Length: 294
Image (cartoon, rainbow, N blue to C red):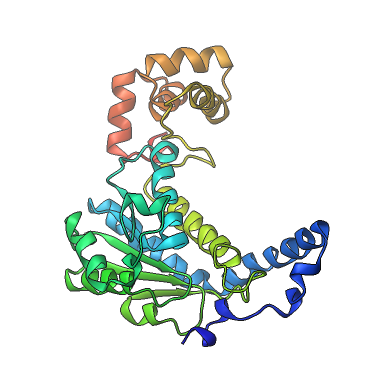
């Protein structure tokens, strides 16, 4: 029942929210948000299991798939979409599914989250296999759409993981790996786009970033597979080359173009004195890990 969920309880600190001045509202929201990161810490071991599963999926040619409804679904889609330019992966490698489809990202689709069958059919629609890792996201921990997806994922042998913001969440019973964080009652009762949404966003940041580190998308703390799809990212790409090799801007720019705008290749060319072709071969032999290559 909803009244038993911590995400639905009234926050005793904000019972007079409607009487507070703007500055007071912002102050208390800031204080409450400050508790979110601490609520995640106990769940780090389970989050690590998800990361390892995602890395294993990627190395075997599988995918990382987020699925959820409402805010949870939108956060999954957001993280998936941002992996493409940040880590140079294809849009098929990290996938975000939201109950109700793309339209639901900007407009609520009535009843979509209540359908167990829709969760299954959405995964069928992307040809889910045992190589994939599916992460069901639900602040309440009880969304039927997510339960349907997790059950189907397990039936085909895919890794099924769950992220919720309540203890003893229903979706945890349908997953192999269950992350349960309790950020507590919201400033605005039941509005899980607030602390619960922030907790989910932080966890997804961890999963995607750490899993990409695990497949060689990062050198030092640099996004060396960034896709330079606009002027800002082109300049960032050159700066990454500079920071990775301690070369000048002019040299970074020159080798960047010589490497056909492939940052990793440019870095290896500079650090090993290789031609573009040799650098590409060395990277391939090292499975794309710059540190191993040099």
